[in-house]
Image (cartoon, rainbow, N blue to C red; front, side, top):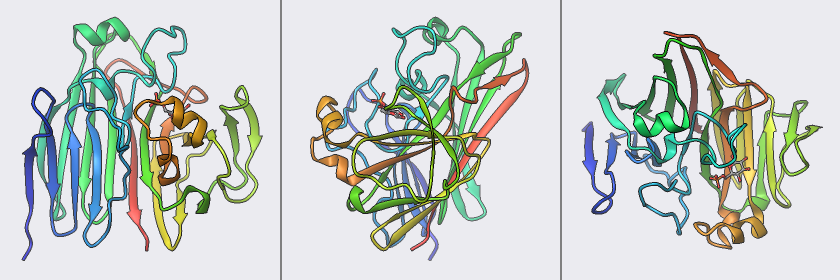
Length: 286
Ligand code: BG6
């Protein structure tokens, strides 16, 4: 029997609730704090996403794990270091704009609009929509609408934390022959030869519009994307994990971030009345 459910689940008192999209194909949980996907479990599978055992579920704080929405800037603010890392979308309260079914899969559209607080950080009228379709695969589309009378420029990322068995056995295919910016070497430009492997901290921005394949053990995930000129690959390894209070020292072995992004290397300018969509599809292959 096919069951399709879309419902609200509370995490704790004084914290925005989650929206759950459930069907015979998968179960997906999205926090309205940040418009943040916390979990995506295809039927018969484990969660494809990782959330830190020390993640903080507090207003004003980003949740460590899942899929934070980095917007309207990725990383540090380009001109003002006092502004929050990765923008404010991941710490804002989103609203549910629409829910329904699309080709047998439950979907939701969450949205975030300019208010007095966002104006202090990004002084434009905007509407941000995140469309999440949870079928056999997970589809996310992040659309930025410029509702202002002036053009604005953004950088952004769907900062996906994937769950892996052991980072030392992870490979990423699909970026061979691509230039990347090494954020650990003062943004030095490098060239990827072969697969990406992990033997220490990695923090790179690949200049690719193509998707990639994440392999770990006998499992593989296909990550496709559109409207994105960069893919960020990040693992903090042990020393950085120790510095992050919401990250258990040993848990760096269990995650890797592969982020569908538009970074400072290729920012997006949107005209008044215009819009831009960046999307990704995460599909389990085995
Ligand atoms: C990655 C960046 O996208 O996010 C890293 O490339 C950064 O440099 C990481 O450390 C985590 O950022 P934050 O703000 O969530 O700790």
